[in-house]
Length: 480
Image (cartoon, rainbow, N blue to C red; front, side, top):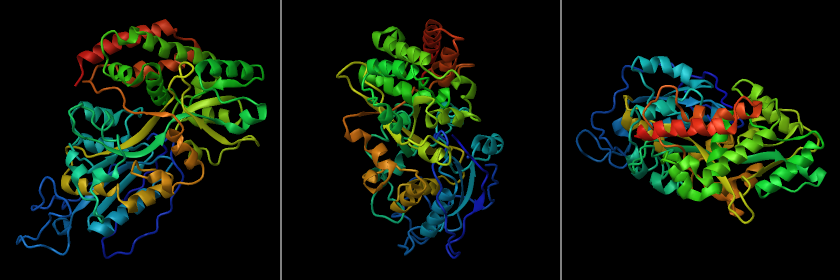
């Protein structure tokens, strides 16, 4: 999951020779920032406007400068990034490439538990200029910044020219990634979070096991239950999951499959009565039944320390399917496995024969705290994250940026993973709408964590539904 090591570096100046970064494999739950002091001279250049781009920067005398980044001379920004299975070397290399291109120096902080590192300094009013930390993590730091309106509007970044290129950012980012509640959390048409490393999510399995047994990959949930019964007869469980948090992408895709985009939109905005509809009942019924087919050891290991043991169940043929993302390959690269092991990935089965199958597209986010001291330079760095140079560096470590035609440059298992939408599978995007803080009520604790209790039989499906309805009513009243 989110494996983070403190790695604070001072990026070199333009005159310094670049260090060669070495990429590593993808991160933890793949889903996943830096007690770094800010230099006293990190002020935004006086002549840099709110929407500075490389093309509109001039000299103090108003004359055109040969250096498009002259206004940033002497600027240093602090970048904090979560270290996941992709490792931290790629961030060092990207920071150095950005400095080489623009002259803006970067103080980089990476850590597997970034929230613990940067949290104390932020409480004291010292914020990184750019933070790469996705939503959906247990600490919920990004969600808290969203709820408190402490993230900078970066809509103007979409019209900025990518440093070192002629294209603007909006032309580089793939369609749909800036039109989702994950990037536009307030539903006002403004972008506050930049889409980062994306991964088609679905059910991962040992394709070699199914081939060996002569079992077909199920295309509907009825076929899934039939496979579960066959597997049970051979002491193999149908299902496991790393942590209950992994049910976010599972639930989103299931909502799309059950009722399409319209149901998804109503459910994620807590429409009154939505959880008592037939579409919602279908979702609850499937998850509750799946709990009966889940390896019973799963809940005890479903935490940020032991989650890989649940993933190991699939490699050991003790469970067939698990919800995950493409980062799983790198995360378990060194783990032992059965001789017949071969990665397979499928979208969630259709609710009924002929129905649509969906694969959720999970992606991380980068954002600028509204308390950032160097907002113009921070926007410049954010724009650089979509440059061909940065995308190439990230891809070496398995971190795939959501840019146009990126799939054409992939190889190995990633070809299969990222071509899933070319085989009739529909993409699912979005998440639950932001709401003002409610003591004891969070999306994860209401919709995801109860799966553990369903598997352990400490909670019934009806009790779960009641709690969802109650919490959803509160969330609706607190919608932003």
